[in-house]
Length: 231
Ligand SMILES: Nc1ncnc2c1ncn2[C@@H]1O[C@H](COP(=O)(O)OP(=O)(O)OP(=O)(O)O)[C@@H](O)[C@H]1O
Ligand SMILES: Nc1ccn([C@H]2C[C@H](O)[C@@H](COP(=O)(O)O)O2)c(=O)n1
Image (cartoon, rainbow, N blue to C red; front, side, top):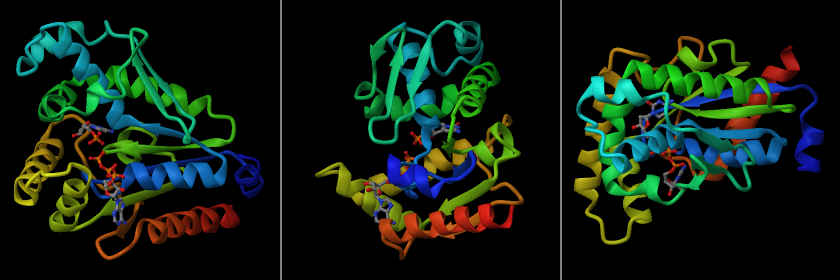
């Protein structure tokens, strides 16, 4: 952290949004680590509340049922980019929130306005308390959660590249099925009424299709440093 902290003079708030598999988590973690910033994976928070709904037998397709209990779970995110953590009511859910069942149900739960209000409040409070600044990644960070962020990035990549990356992670999973699932989740996340997946007007779009992860990280760090130098 010391080297990173030396590269960062003032607190900086960085919003990184984009569809699934564009490299938001990998890029955000690396940028935060290199610049000595905190890191927040907001998708993990929506997955965590979805895990709680499923574990407690709530019908995730029933928005009123989800809304009625949205305030119940206590979700705590650890923001060290070298060791991000997520707990629900004190239980470490970092593994269980990545199952195909939770992935299939998270878009419906995260579309419920009461869920978004609860999670957005948590996100703003974590960003406000990050001493050196923070990289926050998700779908609506630049548009809704932190509209005054110092730097806003919107990552994109072709569905084929994203599916290939995801299939590489999940050995034996069919690329075409992965591509279809990604497109379906993006469509649900982009079409919901409350703070949909969208590029903020003042966000810089970075197409990562033909870039390595290291190139994307360097590009984002350059954009942050340019913005800081211009301040
Ligand atoms: N530029 C890149 N080139 C090749 N692979 C990459 C690149 N960026 C990320 N990856 C790989 O793609 C996969 C998905 O990346 P990551 O989880 O960071 O995406 P994401 O946008 O956060 O996805 P999600 O929104 O679904 O959580 C990971 O295996 C990661 O290592
Ligand atoms: N700011 C955010 C972040 C995530 N979500 C929802 C929509 C995603 O499909 C889901 C899981 O995110 P991932 O772990 O794939 O990044 O969470 C959202 O609505 N807003």
